[in-house]
Image 1 (spheres, rainbow, N blue to C red):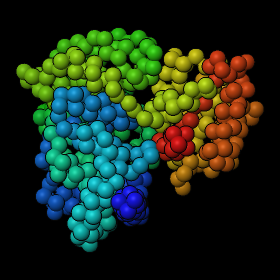
Image 2 (image 1 turned 30 degrees about the vertical axis):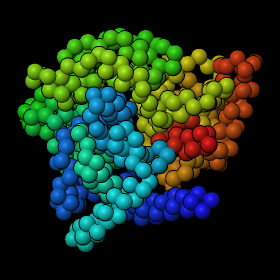
Image 3 (image 1 turned 45 degrees about the vertical axis):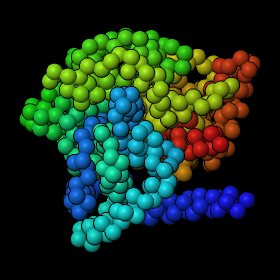
Image 4 (image 1 turned 90 degrees about the horizontal axis):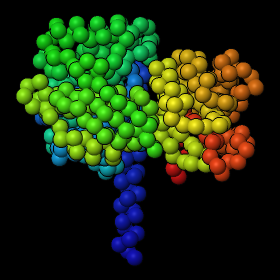
Length: 458
């Protein structure tokens, strides 16, 4: 018995240390506060001996689809028996999701260990710089160090925000991916797609391959100009690669994708939405480019692609986590993401009655997000998520009533109560709930999707 209790004491100790590291990290500047400079991240990389140069990398920016594309590229690389590192943000449920090795978040124990290893170096940099390392700079540095120590064969790196000044941009990735650009973070990146593209183009490095998803014309011009200035090769969705055919399938879709080196048929992807097919095409092109497509290499075995995609998941992206009534979690938080989600719901789900549960950040274009969801949602329960940035419920209700009309909006202060309320409304809206047709969509923010996942997964 003694052994068992010491084991649980050990795990409690690990948990306590992990929570302490997380609390210390969260005391640093938040992700939403940007001071455009690579000085601090460059300084900590220097004192750590530049761990980010220890492995090649694929760098991913864009407005929507970054995390899903990163997860698919990671799955393809792992199917090739390569050891991968992956960093994505923000996290859904736990901070350690930001640092994955071999497709899994590093353990709580390892996360704490990496944090403690880096802390003295961080304190050294903090003392020398006008501003201390931010939360995001610190977790990025931890990821780069953890990947070097693993060691990984390749890292898949998702930009936090923008590109040029993003702290992930201390790597020289041989493949830069730009997923679809639309408006988001306009107060930080500019209020038109051209300005946003200028910022994101900064991840395209000399001699790299730039894999570009379909873009608004203004954004495409900026990205192609940058690629030509730095001597990068361009691969454009719809020209050099793309989705050839897409059919709905149970729990996802069946795809034919034209890659940079060949066509891949009969790919089952257990994710919903035309946007995920586009993300899949970008992931294939990125991995082909990484393997040397265009330079005599880069062919993927179609069976490898099939095996990798069949196992892909993208939590919080049109993720069905319950049935009867169906509960779907989606991290859409800007107009582009919301439009893609709304389109997928209308095309791929047959709800007779769909109730939205919605909580958003107050610095987002919340009205435009609500407008995107209005045609597919019968009623909407507005609430708040667990962050201080969450829009107050009264303010959100007023916006929602403008968009949906008063009789379709219910305001509920707490997320758990809001979900319960929505489930009851969904069931009441169909003649026989046991036959399906009733659904709840929880959306508006990555945090909202993450909070709901914690509540519902139990």
